[in-house]
Length: 77
Image (cartoon, rainbow, N blue to C red; front, side, top):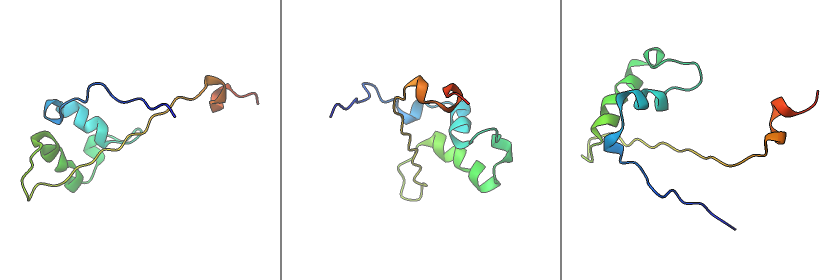
């Protein structure tokens, strides 16, 4: 099995506030529409603290290649 590994993993300290908001929002939802408790995580995300009391934030992303012919909008109807 061939596995591809990321050559450069960006430092979490270098993330921008705009990028944090994009990661926290799904679909057409805006950051301002998130619950206040969730919006508060933005500052923790940007601080990237390793203190015992800091929240643990995990972002999981899975990407894989798919042949364009297999996409729903390319299938005959």
